[in-house]
Image (cartoon, rainbow, N blue to C red; front, side, top):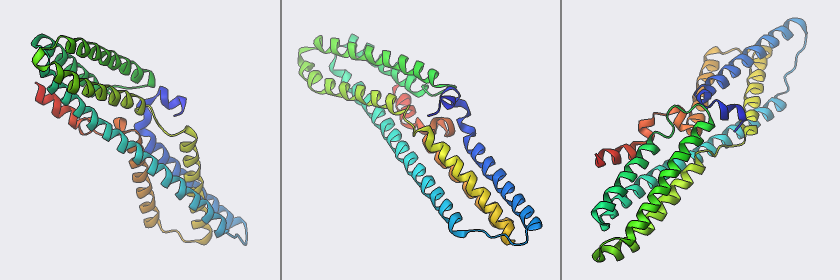
Length: 263
């Protein structure tokens, strides 16, 4: 992810508009230049083979970007469900501990849940996300220490259950949260987005130019194309940056349900 985006995560929500505006501007520029060529040159030829090659390359990169964003989104939503389930398992298995330790562990789990829900709130740059991840990591370390100490003090009747059930569940919880921390910062290289931006802009320029040269202006189809392209870009960025472009309550539905059950 480019340094500019890392330092201005709050502008990611405007990325689809920026791409759409560029496509619109280049489309109009191509159309105006095509009209100018038809007025000043007697014979103007559009090489359809070259234009088709560029459009095909644009479609290929657009499809690749969409598939990549979908994979990232599926991974993130799967981790959210796994994290919520892991929290629930450890919370339930804390009943194997003595009452004092059980209360301490459950309070730490509630704190971790609260921090995870609010991790992406008011994020303006990557440093803000790193700070929230550090706080969450500290709470996870605290939970790890509390549970391991509590297992050694667990009642004799439930100590084996705590050791054989609670301990593996804790390990899985820590692993899923660590994976989520790393995955949340994983995005495609900046050059992919730049290449897509350049291809879509050039493709729009050629479309407008070809329309004017061939005198095939169909503004209904042009508006339809622009609308579909704008929506496609919104979907791609929404999948790649869900916490900036989607409803937080929908993304955190499993966490919010768990939080409500623990109240």
